[in-house]
Amino acid sequence: MKKMLHMTNYRRGNIVLVDFGFSEGTGSKKRPVLIISTDDYNKSRQEIIIMAITSNIKRMLFGDTKIDRWREAGLIYPSLVTGIIRTIKMNMIIWKLGILSRQDFQKVQENLRRVIGF
Image (cartoon, rainbow, N blue to C red; front, side, top):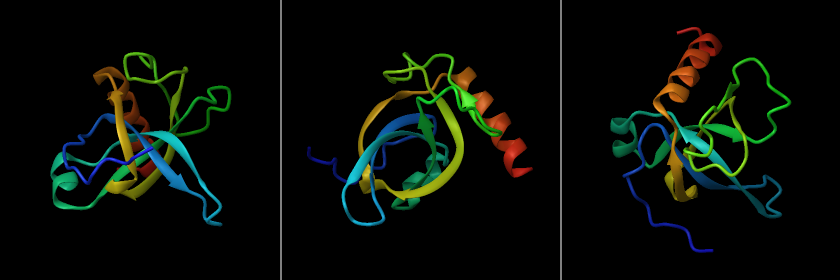
């Protein structure tokens, strides 16, 4: 599968598929993530700030947010945005899956405020 060229048209609230390489260098795994960095941040850097998404909705931990409109967001399974925050290079993005609904994104923001304390 061919990766997209470096593009800056990814926006806050987009759900994208990324290729995470294993630290041992033995391969990689494709995972959906939510972009949480601002559009200005995304345009001025080669990195984006993301939160991981999982379909393991039975294991909901502090800081996780259940996605109510997961189908509309381009996800295949019921999912949640985890409290795991990471900065990645834009060239790790394979393609855009969809956009998180405004209501779901507001819930993510509320949980993020509780996690970070801002």
